[in-house]
Amino acid sequence: MSTTTAVFAGTFDPVTNGHVDLVLRARRLFPRVIVSVVRGTDTLFDEAERIALLTEALAEIDGLVIEGFTGLVVEQARRHGAAALVRGMRSFQDWDYETQMAFANRGLADEIDTVFLPPSPGMTNISSSLVREVASLGGDVSGWVPPHVGRALQAKLQG
Image (tube, rainbow, N blue to C red; front, side, top):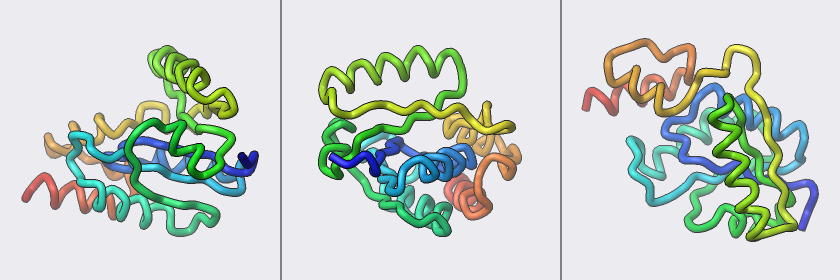
């Protein structure tokens, strides 16, 4: 296990500016970050599309691996020798859910810690589900997602 590797897992459906911010900040803490895209979920974008959108959004950040995975996130962390899981914490509701998950993950793999990062100012209310809902109703999400993601959302929702 390496203290230099962390896993940041999620559906990233779609990737938001909040996700990009968390990856940047995680990368400052860990020389290597594995951005792990959950497979097999009911998503707007398929796995390949989500990985492509993430790859473009994170292209200028070195020390990253972006890949899909199935199963337990602690097993994904073990596969990469990671010492930590990185999780965003936007609200009290996130705190409740994320601490439950951290305790469960710690019970499954006590050698892997969870690192919680609060959002940067202006990113508190950004979530993928909000982005999808607003975009599906024709709203402007350009302040919440990278430009290429906004274009992909528009194309997906119009097609």
